[in-house]
Amino acid sequence: MTALDERPHTDEQNGDEQNGEEQSHDEQMLIEQFESLAKAAMREAEGLRLEFIDGKMGAKAVPDGLHETIIMWLVRQCLQHHPSLDLHTGQGLKIETYRKGRARPDGTLAPIGHFVQAGEWAEPDGVLMTVEVTSHDYDTNQRDRVEKPRAYAESGIPVYLLIDRDADEVTVYSEPVEGTYQDRHTAAFGKSIELPAPVGFTLDTETLRSWKAARESDG
Image (cartoon, rainbow, N blue to C red):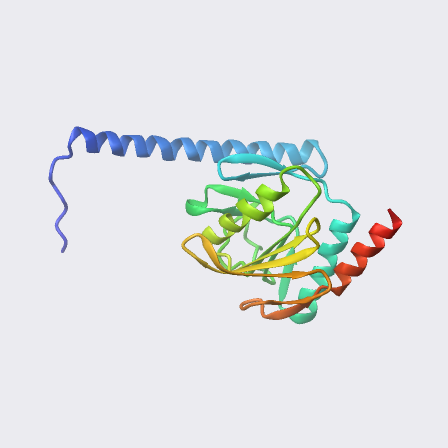
């Protein structure tokens, strides 16, 4: 049996422990306040989706028609290659180290029935891939290209797929290690890109290129 450490704690140690407990309590209170606010926002304003990442609250832009069309296209791609998986849209996830953040990915790939017991904010365990499609708002660069890759990697999500409408390219992040994706591949719209295991299929993005061209010609 391992003996307990009965050495008296110094005042400095006691102070550090107390500060740590207070900080943890404050963080939990902040998360609970955010969750209450996010729930109220969804009731009061249709389409308003709040997230809490890197200690900051933000609102996801209301998706336009092309954004939703891309998501539905990807749902069909995932279903075609993996009938046993669902690409969920709008499921909230607990993210980051110690699950201090809250995100609503545009898409969350998981086995059928995976979220049956989940509440509004589910644990990321068992999630195979998260997806974000950029919107034309002011904080897209910071949120989708910087904060989300870090947050999803910290959560241990194997694959993060970013469909970047500003850059006309698709980026696949994989192999999360100690809060960082070790592998990153980018392909222009119209090219094919591999979604590595556990997703495991090649995504042909020619459809994205043609939709982009059609939208620009109409504009």
